Amino acid sequence: MTPAPYLALVLGVAVLCQLLAYRMRVPSILLLLVVGFGLGQWVAPEDVLGRDLLFAGVNISVGIILFEGSLSLRFRELRGLSTAVLRLCSLTVLLAWVLITAAGIVAGLDWQLALLVGALLVVTGPTVIAPIVRQLRPTRRVSSMLRWEGIVVDPIGAILAVLVFQAVILGQPGGALATAVTTLGWTLLVSTVLTLAFGVLLEVAMRRHLIPDFLEGVAFLAAAVGALVLSNLLQPESGLLTVTMLGIYLANRPGLRLENVREFKENLQVLIVGALFVLLAGRVSPAEVVAVAPTALVFVLLLVLVVRPASVLLGLLGTEASRQERTLLAFMAPRGIVAAAVTSIFALEIEHAAGNAREEAALGGADPQETLALQAQAERLELLVVESADLVPLVFVTIVVTVALYGLGVGRLAERLGLATTTPNGVVFAGAPVWARQAAGVLQELKVPVLLVSSAPGEVAQARMAGLRVERTHILSEYAVEDMELAGIGSLVAVTHDDDTNSTAAREFAHTLGGSQTYQLRRQGDARPRPGRAAASTEATAKRQTASKLTARVAFSPPMSAPELDTATREGMQVRRTTLTDQHTLEDFRAREPEAVLMFLVQGGAATVVTPHATLPQTGATLVALVGRR
Image (cartoon, rainbow, N blue to C red; front, side):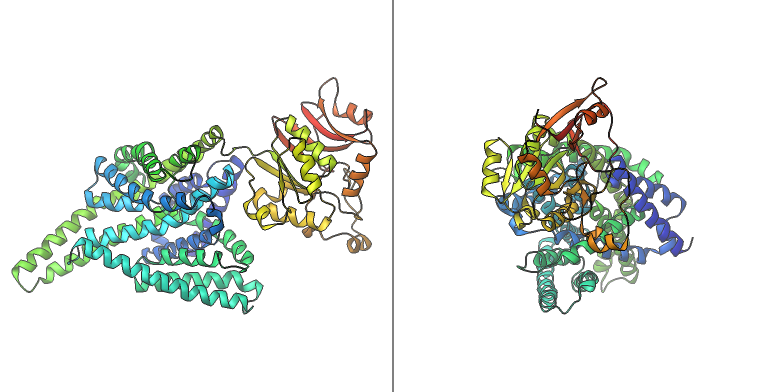
């Protein structure tokens, strides 16, 4: 197969797997790995793309993923968590490295390879953490700790692997400690200098508007790739640290607007992650997996049951993290694409080192003693090449098992700890008028999580007196958009009197909740859509109504504007609930309450916002509606 059809197939399979995983509510990485494994038995990626091109693409792609992830790391997220995050990215990493190394030795690995595997597997990574967090939607504190650990520790793991490789496996002259310190020093120096150089250049270009909006995404992509490659040329394997530091630097510059960059990178990252997992999984054969299975089983059990709990609980001892948060973090460490990619690269580096050692041994040294030393080094590396043949399948099995265990099981644990829910079904109201407070009270009685957001002191006071959860802030404030707690929330209904605020809020929160779960009231002056009938598309209507891309889904049936709902409330209408049964169906309800405004349908503790075109069940649900005074 030629490269073009193969790459088209990989991209198509990657997108399809992620779509199916979303529908099935399982971690997409599981499907990607299984399908990539099967595709690799038909056509190996190295046979089509070549080893050098494949690994060059993998290295650049991993750098892009880390750069995208680091652009979301804000220092303000660390308020009340700075010590915990610092420990997760330092002490916990060192503990995990030591314990993983010990686990590798127990599982039967050579101690040198065990050190390397320990460095490679201290990482978790945004490619596995982000999908699980998106599906689980835990508290802000847990989400921040997981994301900071997943992104920051990735380059740390790569640097540890470089130190182990150069100081222990290659056994460079001068001593392992001196080699490690020198390598670490150069890595930090190169990464810091390039971060400041590229960061300041991009910041100045953005502040002076030298980059047009439509080129911001590709300009930052080119800069990140350039920084990655240049860093690796100056100091091998320092590029991942450079792009991570660059992303964090840019994300925390005051007043620097990166919305276009983040949106472009998010879409690109989803595509890259899918393709990478398919490609790298295709390099592993069934025979390799079977051969390493006994070792991998012991190794993974030690990782899950001993290494992660011990390293997290000891590392976070005495920090701001609560007992529940420490427990959840102790059982949340899936490995991702960085572990797979860097392992593949170092397995190849060991082969190259062995080949170079053979050539040097064949040429001989200046004296017999040096020749013997070269021959001994060549033999040692040859032995490591044989033993490292199991390195890639071992890490592959580790990724599959940890993603399956944590991705499928962490939801139940998080629910029991009160830190997340696997089925977010709550409702957040942007605004808190009388009828919205009534609706929130009814939903709360039905065990549906609710949150009211308002900047009006009177509305906030009334909501608190009614025992409702309320945030006193504007729905478009930086706090509401970036930091407000949305654990358990599944949909938003924007109900303020400002239609433009409602539209903007719905579009903004669609990034978190999904466009299908954000609603607004009917805009004042817009024609009222009728159930079952499409809106007229005349030229006059097109000129009068707001563009569809600037609005969200219209809530309630029939749709009402904010003033109309306020008027109905003043005239005596109230929000009440009605259980739909065989004796009292939806049709019976409509006949009894012809003026009712249908708002929510509650089934199994989940609230669904009723829309003008929704098809509602006749029985078996609880209807929340604005009805006339009884």
